[in-house]
Length: 420
Image (cartoon, rainbow, N blue to C red; front, top):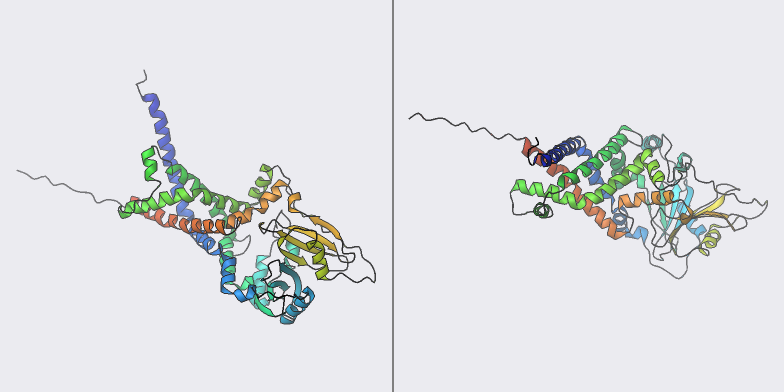
């Protein structure tokens, strides 16, 4: 015969067993990946405001006093080439902001004894670009030096090589532990991110209170309590308020890292994963015809598009190629640009790849990196991302402190009997 209350005791026992199980997973995964997670959160915090830091430290490089007449892009390109004679032109970035300089992207041959070997290691295997494209062929076309030119005077205001900057090293540590893509460091960071996701999920399960009174305690920090209580509250309370944001950051990191996660994104959105981007159209070659100037090519696209934040122009590589012009609409994320192709002889639009015309999977995938970095909605989301990453540094420290407090054995008290 079943005793009264025995039927209710089984679910309670099961819940307790599950909580012990999740606590064990949470503990050992945290101990295994805690250092890597701490380093990833620290470097991620430093990278949130990378662009703002550069603009604040070097304002003269990016901003000038506007004037009435702008020089042609041909003149600005000439000034940049005189600044770096051995460089090859890669791209020209023109901002609609009248106070911004024009960025001339150049390809400078890297010295083998300095950056050459590192670059070879980084690009040893083909890199899957946005949308799944093999970008190995495009790596050589990416600028490694940006020269900033005053659009009104033609004066070079500065240069910037991101690969030689401190924050680039921070990013490489954040992504690969400075070991390069597809290296052991890459796998360590990727697996640690996966473990971090499980740590966050089990943490939410362990946090979930039984009663409303316990919930009230876990929603605020008791600053006047003991050190042990303060450590406990910092771990649980900050974990609750940041867990959702950190889960999103971890998930987006996994999508950018693992091919399987990227494929899952396209499967969930019901979209086909395109491994290769459509090839750019070709210009209709006209023997003896003079090729279109870069200023005219830009005007063709600017006249047919709405107000944009900036235009990135890539010049034709040969007599059959086209001008490739990326247009970032006003207020859009950097990965949501439209691309137009201009025939270098006729000056007509030879084709286009519009962001709105892409599949749902491609559009969602374009937002993965901005969400991960916190730049998706500009300054407000960057501030949130910075605060969340900064608070996440508390978890490994407080977690270790809580674990040490539990493992410390209390000295046994021996009682001696007095004989009367």
